[in-house]
Length: 139
Image (cartoon, rainbow, N blue to C red; front, side, top):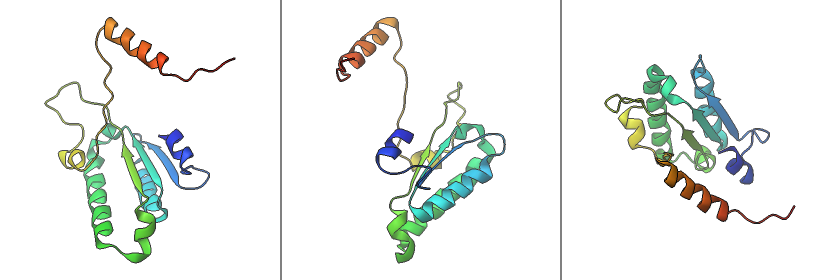
């Protein structure tokens, strides 16, 4: 995410990118990052949200409030807030009956999964395709 942000000018140096790894009391930092980046139209990456299950209800309300503010279309904030992005990462629970992230958050997000293929043959095929698609660099 950081590399993509750099290409588009969203960096910590430009004060338009914040990365917060949740756990060990980082919820306050995450809330401030969301508030700050919404105002300036920056990107926020919240990693490991599955570690703060008790705080996820607060995050859900904050996401709802942001959506309502964007729908309202306040002319002072809307120009920069359209550039605002909130990226969330979470690990799945080993028990599929137990949800790590509330359904309301999951339903309101674009989801990207990264699941490794199973089996040695599949992994070998993956790496061959990956390596063949790399641009040639002469050293």
